[in-house]
Each structure stands twice: as C-alpha cells, then as structure tokens.
Image (tube, rainbow, N blue to C red; front, side, top):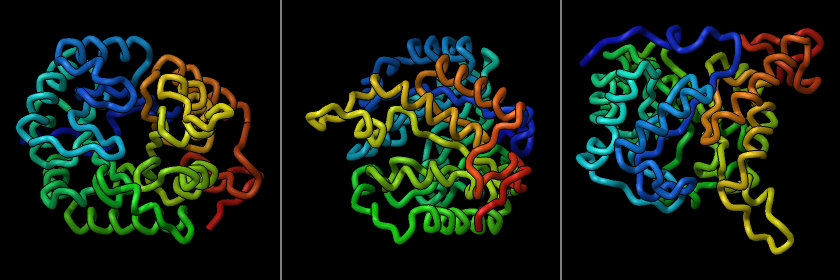
Length: 307
C-alpha cells in the first residue's frame, strides 16, 4: 500500500468550493449511458474535464443508480484501475468512487488521492482500516443500503437530524479505526434512500451539516429530484441532460453555504457557478438569517448557527 499525504491539505487551499468532475466507467450510468465506458474514452473525458476546470476527477466503475445490481470486483478493477493510472500520470487529483476496500487500495496504489465511498464504510468492513493505514482522504456518504433496495429506506422522522446522527455514527467508527479527522469528508447522500422531497431540507439546511465541523461534499448533479422539479405539465421528469441548469443553481447555493466540493457531470457550467458564489461570498453575501455559518463552521457576522 502506498502511503500518501494525510488528509485534504493537498486538495485545494480552502479558498473556494472545489469542483469534482464525474468520470463514469460504466455501461449503465443514469446520466451518460456509458459514453465513457472504454478506458481510452474515459481518460480523454477526464482530461477534458480538467481543462474545463475540474479540481478532482471521480472515477467510478459501478453504477449506483436506483435499482442497479452489483458488478464483480474483478470487473470493477478492470474498468477503474487503467483510468485512475492514466489520469494520475496526467497530473489529475483523482478520486476513486467505490465501496470496496480492494478496489480503493488498488486505486490508491495507482495514484488516487481520495476514496469516495457512497456506503460510508458500511458495505465493506475492510474500508476503514485501509483508509487509516493509507492516510488518504475519505468521503463518507450517508447510506442505508445498495442501489437495488435504497428507495425502500426513504423513511425519516426529520431527514436533516437523522442524516446528521447517522453520519456522526460513521465518524465515531472511523475514529475508532484510527482514521484522523483531517482525512474525513461527509456527504449527505442526496438521492440515496432519498427519492424525492427528502433532498430539499438537506440542501436548505446545509449550513447545519457544515457546522458539524467536517468538509461537506454535495452530489446533486442530474439527480431524480431535479428531474421531478423540472417536470413539464404531464409530470414526466426532465431527462438527465436537461438538469444541468438546475444543478448549477444548486452548486451556487451550496458553495455559498460552505460546501467543500460539489460533484458534477457538467464541469464548465459548475466552475462558473462556483466562481460566482466565491465572488458573492467575498463581497459579504450570506445564506439566510438564522442558519448562516462561516466556512469553518463558526457563525458568520449577522447570523447564528442552528443546533
């Protein structure tokens, strides 16, 4: 195992929200239909996203769309490792999107700097020891089950309170395994066991998650709840490629609210959106009146953090 720099210090300077570009190496992605499935195409796509302003490239070889079935680990490795290797050699900051410790470890050896685990470590008991030993940055997402069952778990008393509590459980388990706080990023898991309306309170109350003290990654890009929001009169959800404008709007809002990074398919538009949010923030702009917090989690001037 290659042991790299500990934590997030090598991923941005904290002055603005980072843009994580999605590189799907799958034949069945909900958003791009396998356009980048072959390694050569995936690497070219990753390079293009870098040129458009991506700070991090998130390479994934297993679809997590609702209803998707798992792929064998050998196939996931075949899809992911050549792409991670090539993009890391090209100078990209690479994230590997996987729930498997074996895949994560191979990707880190190939040059990845970050493990983006949508299961938050619940899918593979070997993930936390791997992260602790490697020193890699690690995204722990809120998760209640694999893609084929997650929609049935969209049951909450208060979605923000419940997600914060369950993410706190992940943090406690990470600490117990020897993972340092400076390695950890939290993700509220939009669209995962949150089929529709449950997503909006997490976005509206994002400063509460930021206030918990860990960097927050937001992945709203092209997701179903945006398709439902944009549905025409016949209530047919807008198709994924028609959701980029709404994604940019979300990116502006969560960047202004203190998100560490946004994970998106359309990098160019989001990079512009983040620039707007950064300029607005530097000019004294604030989100809300009763939940406004600074990027470090402290209440900003004129606002108070919510419990």
